[in-house]
Each structure stands twice: as C-alpha cells, then as structure tokens.
Length: 305
Image (cartoon, rainbow, N blue to C red; front, side, top):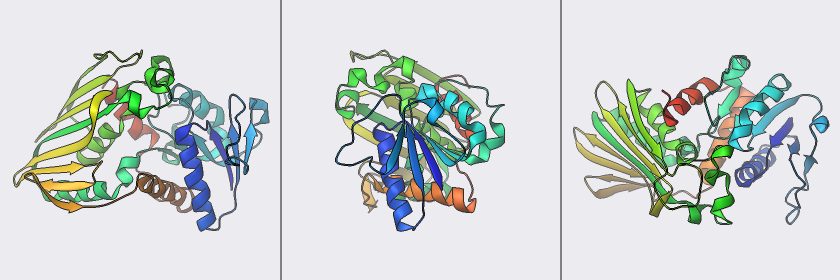
C-alpha cells in the first residue's frame, strides 16, 4: 500500500499516528510519504518512517490513498492535482473553503471520504437510536469554545483565525451541521447569520447561527469561538420529553437527569474513524460522507444553500 499525506499539522499528525498504529495492528504493509511546503524537524523520531517531499516534482507515480490534511484553501487544488493518481482520498473537514465545481472529480465521489469524526463517537450512535425511536418536534444544538484556549500556540496565527486560509467558526465547527444532516436529512429551507462579533484578534468569523426548517421540526444551531465555557450539546424536544446529549461529557439526559454515560477518550473516535476508512479502502464499505454530500453541507454552512 502506498500512501501520501498533504500537510502534517496537528490533525495530520493525529491521523498519521492513528494510521500507523492501525496498519501495525492489522499487519498491513505500507510506505508513507508526506508533501510539506517547508522542512520540518523530527520530534523524537516522530517522522522517521515517513519520507518527506518538499517539491511537487518529488511526487512520482500513483498512490492507493491520499490524505488531504493541508489548509482548507488548498484542498481543491490538491484533489485536482492528484485526482487520477490515487484510488482513495481522506479529506479533512471542511471539504473546501467555498463552493467549488466538482465536475472534474465527480467520478471519484465514492472514493472521497470527508472527515466526520463525531459520527464515530459511541454517544453519537446512541443519539441516532434515540432520534429513530422518538418523535422529535424541535432541536437545539450548540458548539461553543474559546479560540485562544483551543489554539494554544498563538490563536492569532492559526488557520482558524485567518479568513484567507479557510478559517472561521462556520467552517471549523462544521461537524454540527454534518451530524444534523446525517440525523434529519437536508432541510427544506435554511437561514443563517455568520459574522464576527467578539474582540478576538482574528479576520475570520467567530459567530454562526442557523435555523433549519423541516416538514415536521425546526433545528436551531449556534456556533462560536468566544465562549469561555466549552459546550457541545444537542437537545431533542420530543413527544416523551427533553433528551440531551453532551458530546464533551459523553452523557445522555432525560428531562435533566443523566440516564447513561458512555466513557470515551478523545482519540478513540478518531481511531474508530480511521478503522472505518481503512475498511472503506480495502473492502469497499459504504462511504458515509462523500464529496457530494459534504458539498451540500458546506453550502448551508457558508449561507449559500
């Protein structure tokens, strides 16, 4: 198996570590290369088993898998560049920073998986069961975090803070829209307010709110970069009462009382996702988040649906 990474930032390194662990566990042979725009120092031998490439001319031949984990504004050009040179693509979310024509690459739709790690959490599988078992009238979703605490080096220099690199809470926190659409499908109508409202020193948006209209329900979604208290919740108002799922505490509550806890380490669902993706490439299992699907989610996220 021949694998190529584009970009090895924090999320790229996480995927690389998980990939190498899974390949070892499954006794799968692979050579891994990584294209970087600048030289990187090895940290405690972290990259000793990865061949580093620093010029496009060094990318030679075809690959079984390409990981697109570079800045969001480079995803599209990377896919175009590697379209006919790879069998499968793992694309970090969001798929693009703006709506693009995928006509040139649509034949690889099923071979392009766009990351949706929250869907691989144990608590999300339980949430799916709860939605299917209850009549849901309305939904409230919130993802609130404080960017300076999230991007610990200097949040002002992170891609999240830079609109030119595809930053902004509407793109960074697209996970919530992704799982809402997975649970309920595409809405009939969507309304959004996306803007910068806080005093954070960023050029990107730090607030996004959405109202999604369905035949039998309404979904409200709030995203922000300025919340000092981390929250990642979904509330379902159903015919049986209020159900709340907390993605941080991994708890399920009924009318304010915790009824179930599904403990999970932070990296567990990323491991689950990588195992799923390897199965997709080896066994042809169903792709749960294709290029086309992720593009429909993106349109809503940036207010163009």
